[in-house]
Length: 341
Ligand code: PHE
Image (tube, rainbow, N blue to C red):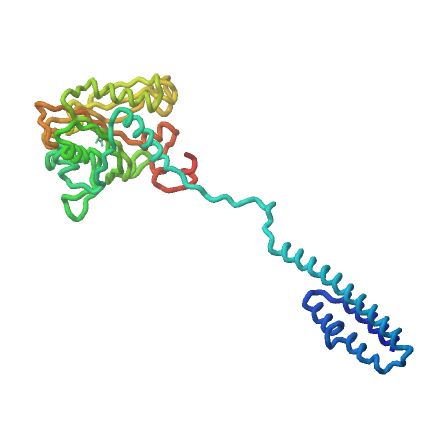
């Protein structure tokens, strides 16, 4: 029986060596050292032995039991460690992988340009005045001194709605009357930014939608000198301190006199380049003294009040600043273009 014990011991140890998971290990324990396990069953056979054999066998079986218990614990620790290591390896985050950056948004180049313009006029005391993109013919044309069927309307081809009196504004000047009527009788000093729409042929230089920033100041002692001073200061703040400006006579129905402002080319410092077409000057905006009829339509008596107005296109400003040669890029929503700014 001692022989039987020894071979059981050997076999159990060998089996333990083959156990490959803690689940199988539990089975091994139950079958070997458990309450109905093979070693226990052997202890119960002690009664069949002679009185001399009994203590020898008893001693030996105790040793075997202890040895197997110890081997079991060691194996258990080993398996737990490898199982844990496997688990870590399979579920771990690989911190050496390069991260995936989140795509961050940015301000549209025109928004940036608008903010530059707001800052300068803000310093001069102009407030931003918002007026609608969808306008009536009255605000866009009639109250701005464009008589019905006057050929000057053809300067700006409009998008009409089903209601012939409702159009998409062709210029931000449409908000002039709204601002005056709201401010009257206080002095007005506002800029009106926003999208404008014209039914024009789309080219690299003209688009059916574009931004404008209008300026309007109405008060009791505003002169053409204020117009020149304000706009020259603006040009220097935006394009550089040593820029010069010149005013060329022009025509708009809602201003009299009217003038277009040029600024010395900031790309070549007025030496002459492709952008300024070798003239040294860049055309920046339209302007003038508010026409008496327009003042009257806004509620202000032209015998008492005068005003200055101007309008510029931020797309054009951005094109000049960044050397952009196609105005259609601004509203194509091509990220390869937009991300450059
Ligand atoms: N509204 C004019 C345009 O779109 C610009 C302008 C504004 C001219 C204000 C004079 C005064 O061309």
